Image (cartoon, rainbow, N blue to C red; front, side):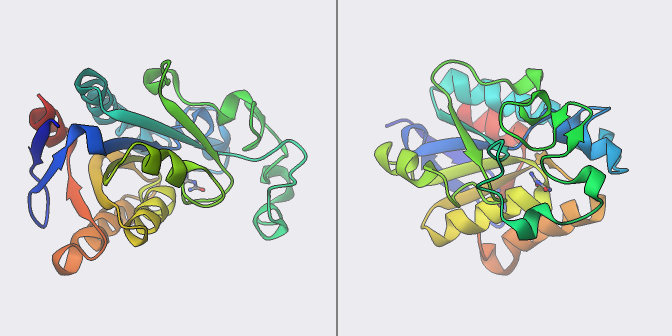
Length: 222
Ligand code: C5J
C-alpha cells in the first residue's frame, strides 16, 4: 500500500492510494459551459469554471498515482422513466428536465450537454456513474464499485458544492467513507453557498468530513 498524508481541516488525514478514490461530481457541459442549460437559467457559469484548473490538477495527480478515478453525470433516461415527477415538474416548462435545451435535451443521458467537459474527460479505465439524483450513491452502483476496490476514503470535487457535492459527501459519510471535499476544485453559482457548504463539512471537528485543496492533494500524492 502507498500511504499519503493530506493536509486538511479540521485535521490532516492519512490514507492509502489504493484505498482512496477521486470522485468528480457532474463536471458537465450543461452546468459549466457558456451557452449551456446553467447559463440559460441566468447563472454566471464563470463561477464554476474557476474549479476546472484545480480539478484538472488533482485528476492528473490521481492518474499519475494510479488512484481510482470516478466521474459522475446527473441525467435521466430519454423516456424520463427514472425521473420523479416532483423533480421534472419544477421551474419554467421551457427549462425542465427533458425539454429541448441549447446542447440537446436538458439532463438527458447521451445528449451533448449532459456529457463531461473536454478538460476533464474520462479516459479508459475510469468509472463513469450516471446518476438520477443529486447524490452519487442514490440509485447507482457506486457503492458496489467502491466496495469491490476496498475503498475507504473519497476525495470529492465538482459542481455544485452545496447540491450534488454536498449530497454525495453526506451519503458517503453515512456509508462509512472518509470524505474530503477539495474546496477549490468545487464550484457553485452562489459563492456564499459554496463557502458555507465547505464550512459545514468540517464544522464541529469534521461533522461529516474534511476540507482540503488541490495544491495539498498534488503535494500529498507527489
Ligand atoms: C448539481 C444541481 N450537479 N445543482 N446539480 O449540483 O442541480
